[in-house]
Every structure is written in C-alpha cells, then in structure tokens.
Amino acid sequence: MKAKGRIILAFMMIILAMLASCRSVAESEVDSSFMDFSSDALLLVETIEDVHPIFIIDGMLPGYYEEWRAIYLAETAYPMTLTDFGLATRRYLTVLRDGHTSVSTVLDGGFINMNFIAQDGRLFLAHTPDDEVLEIGGVAVADIFYQIDRHYFSESKAMRMMRYANLTSFESILRVAGAKIEDTS
Image 1 (spheres, rainbow, N blue to C red):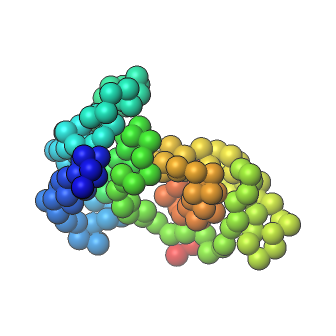
Image 2 (cartoon, rainbow, N blue to C red; image 1 turned 180 degrees about the vertical axis):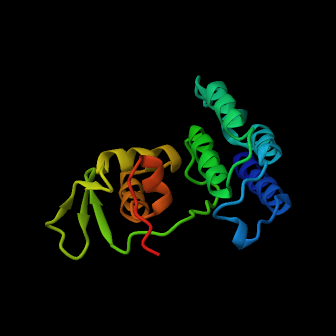
C-alpha cells in the first residue's frame, strides 16, 4: 500500500474511533436541549489537526485556517442544541476543502414537502421544471444556497447542485438563512 493510502486509511480509522467515543443524545433531546459540546469541539479539532492530510502535506493549509478554528471554538464554547453544534462543525470542516470529511448533521424541525431541481445556481420545482423558485419564506434562493455552501463542501458543480436541490427544503437550513417559517403542527 502506498504511503498516501496508509495516511488516508489511518485518518479514517482515527475518525471512526473518535466518532465512536462521542456522546450519544436521546432523540427527544435533539430539538431543544442545550448541551455543552465544547470538549467535543476541541477533541474534533485536535484529531483533525493530528491526522488530516491538509496538515501533513506542505502548502495545502489555507492561510485563514487559524481564524476559522478560533471562530469554531468560540461558537461551540457555550451550550447549544445538537443541531447548532452539527452546523457549526460543518462550517468548520469546510475549511478542509474535503467533501469526504464531514459530520452527519441532525437537522431539527421539519422540511418542505417539495422536490426541487437546482441548475446553474437556480432552483426549480421538480414536477414543473419551468417554474423557478425565487424565494422561500421571504429569503432569496441565492441566500439559501449561500448557507448551504457555508455548511456543506462540494467538490464539484454536480455535487453542489444536488446539495442545493436536497437541502433547500430543510427547516434548519431555511432558518439559518433567515426564512420566516410558520408552525403548522
């Protein structure tokens, strides 16, 4: 096995071990419980910095990494919901520019029961693809796409369009973008 393959394999094994050691949260706690995730955030940062190739291969680390790291640790220094922690972690991980290093985010709330198609930075209804969606909940589609890009790194245009189409319907993403969503329960 080549050295690069061994580095990636070792990295994946360490991440799996780290994830296995993270706390488990009951499903009833996901939506509204505030918890202290600061030690989890620090463990994640330390592990990533120890094993991710961006820190091992010279010239790969972006100059703004330290700023993003500080922002992430500051954001997670206070009690927050699991969803907020997941979204903050996703924002931090985008600095790696690696679509394979991610965290499964619990997106609380509901979703819009609609299927979308994203194409060239525009959003359309899947069942009537000539109908373009310009805003949702009073927020321009471009602003929603911006939030998706902040939280989900896409290695290609195709992956970015797929994320736009799939994630635009989630309440958590819409709320982060500033959409006004009425409780219909």
